[in-house]
Image 1: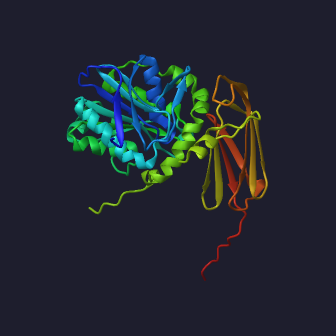
Image 2: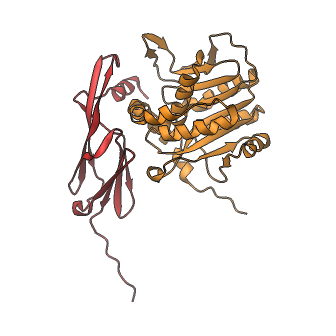
Image 3: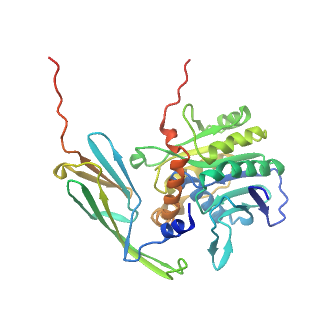
Length: 248
Length: 121
């Protein structure tokens, strides 16, 4: 058995889909955004991800059991989401398996939504969104859409490896990083990321409800945030605050 | 992460208090504690400090009640955040200050002055 298996349950005929990856990371920006997108777009569950490397956990929703790592979407859009923190030893096998699958279904673009932790987040009313691309073509796309590029710095975690694994398979991938609280769930940052995502997907999602229900979302995301913060310390997420050395 | 720990961490205390997410940062001259307190107004926050600890009680504007939640509790209600934090160094409680913005409480705890600058002659 493979270390990580992508299981498609519904026979969706993929038409060069755009993939939105929202796995748990700083501020749970991607997770909150992915969950909101799935709800607002009424995307169906189309599959799940299983691995012995994940905690032995299943989730119950409305009396129905499901895998905590799920795939949602339709022929043109796929959303990857997780209700549990990704264990550090699962990051490489998971990103490799996902990138293989994205390649097999001829994904047009992989967009990871995540956070960019900032110390003064408390004083920022509307978080800014920065981007990283994994190829010249991806960078061109970002410039065309007028998304501000992250010029220097380290990136760490699932999305960083996803960019690399997609590059190795000649898949265009970008990461949208919204300024966020490092260890508190940040629906405000998720709202900024969704607004920015609209430049690529034109989903037309109103983020008003996300901002209105900010307090409730923060409470519900509290346990996942704590699990994610524990995993993050092992993924060298703190490196994102460091200055990279380059003599030139 | 072991299953037992995962389950224990996932369980919430059932005494009407909720432990908030918090972060503690040592900035040299001061210790800065931040806490995530969604649904809390400034008037409903009580902070007590000693030289080596800080206790925060924060009442939510509305009680939070979730039905059919979890495998153990079927109904759970919270009205207040409560957290006691042991500080890594002694602080001067008289000089402590706090602010609450967008649901984030920031407490600044200046350390007791133990260092003296020696001028070079």
